[in-house]
Length: 432
Image (tube, rainbow, N blue to C red; front, side, top):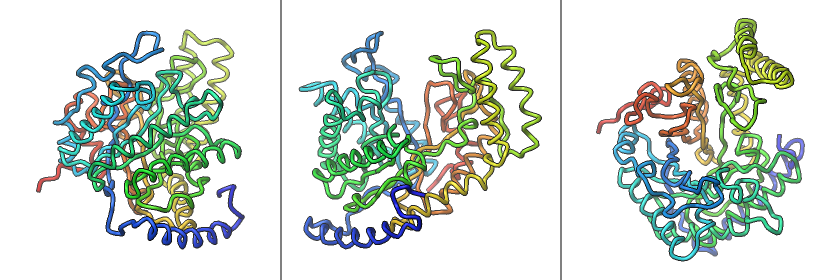
């Protein structure tokens, strides 16, 4: 339950009625046309290789120019046509905000032109585009903690200006086929103070977009990395003008979705030692699975006694929860119910709820992840829980060079869609 509302949610119900009345008046004043509608964004896939992870110097202290030069940043037209053929209707285009904040003058204008060119290229395949500003940790100055800082040397004000400029750019395109997501997975919101901080920040981002366009579709997200807790702690009353969607990401149980994940910066992690988890899981499976984890830890050569003890404790805690009912469709359904209830209380339509990311690791040539059979069952359940509530969704992601196998394409051949993954998402080749 949201910690900002009363025990029964009555203060927000009253506020919702008042807000709806004020919005009708505001829309009349602004001349907002009821017939204007953004892209449906029913089922999509994220694309992260075109305008993310650009070229830098070896120390990662500055970007190289041109930043997106090389085959790895090219638009995969043929692959996108296959996405369309599988009856997806949009692409969530991830964009690193760092270069757009770093460069000025003609180079900044060139980045704007690159963004528009990319959008039009994707739309040329018949897919709509959601422009998702996606902070990453490649450059310290533009990492999420810096972008979300309101300190004197923080860059959030510049970030708001960047979003405003991009909204102005997008407002010149066909608004029925483009949308904007001002920030992916904000890291604030894990306590009341930072939760209120993020609320004011996302309102500023929303206002910046609305200053440029009353009609551009905006995807709004809560804090806590954009998860369910972050969404249900978001007060939506500010976001009532124009087409608005409310996003959450779903990667739980993390011990399942991040199987095999290996963070090179730390030894205290359980991902490398937990793979091949069954889904759905039952309590008796823990006694069968746990000895394998212990054996992997015993064979690990580069762990201190302290590291080993920490991993054993954390892994057992996570797996006890996993096999204790967390890794079932019922457990998943109870989490999605929280989103539905939040939407109901706040008068938000189910088709405004946007499951913006979900996927799980899988085994492949370069990754020791989860069993494909278990992954496919989990994907089908997540997609099913979203669709039976009328939520729209976006899968993460199309392709990638990373080692987690979170891709729609085949891990063995990234030029083709993996038929099994597509089927779990309710997709097959669509022939008119």
